[in-house]
Image (cartoon, rainbow, N blue to C red; front, side, top):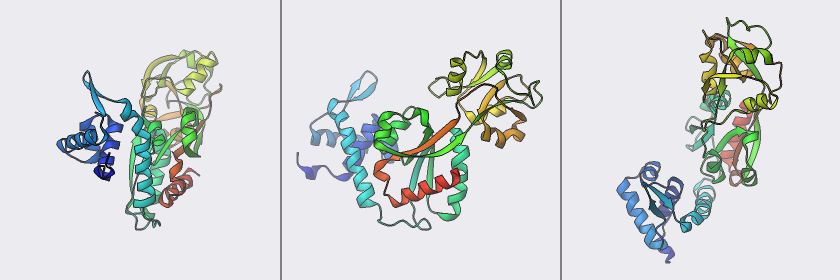
Length: 302
C-alpha cells in the first residue's frame, strides 16, 4: 500500500465508519453528504484491500480486518488531535474548544448544571455537548471518542479502569419520597410500609433493575412495582396525588421537593450510597484544556 494514498481525511471517515457501522450515520456525524461518504468508503476499500463493511441481512457488519483497525485508527487520530492539532497552551477566556460529556440525568442535574453556570463567565467561547448514558458510553470513553463520562463506580468495568483515569465527583445517600399528603409523609420508611404501598422503580435504559432494588431483593424486602421510570429526575414529579413510594438520591429530592410537592423520608433499611466518578482516557491526562475542564467539574462537585 502506498501511504500517500491514505490522507488524514480518509482516516477520519474510516474512524466514523468503524464506529457507526452505517454509512448514513457516519456521514451525519462528519457533516458530510452520504454520496461523499460512500465515495470515501470505496477509496478506503481500494487502498486497504478489504471491503471493511459487508451486508448481513438488512445491516452492515465490520469485516475481521475492519475490527482489527478500530483501536489503531483511534490511536492515530487521538495522537494527531492531542499532540499536533491542539494548541500547546490553553486560555479559557479565548479558547473555542468543544468538550463532549456524558452522564445520567441525575448526575447532569447535580453536576453539569452548576458546571454550565461556572464556566459561562470563565470561558465564554467554549461549548459543552452533553449526552445521556447509553449501553455504548463506556466503549466511547475507552476508545477516546468523548472527553468525559460520569458513571456510578459500581458500573465501571475492569477494561475501562485499565485505559482510563478517574476522579470521584459525586456522593449521596438514598431516601424515600412520597406525595406530601401521603399517609407516610413525615414517617420513616420501613420494610413493612414498602411492602404495603405501590412502588415506583427506577430501571436502566436497558431495562435492568437499579442497584438499590438489587439491595432490597438481597435483603429479602418485599416491594410491589406499580410503575417504572428510566429518568431519575422525573420520578419525584410522578408522585403527587398517588400512593406511590419511591427511592431517590437525597440531594436531588431536596432540590425538587417543593416543586414536586413531595416529602422525603428516612429509610429504615440499608441501601448502598451513591458514588460516581468521572472517567476519561488516560491520553488526555496532560491535555491542558482537558485538565482545566476536570478542575472545573471537581470544583462544582465540592
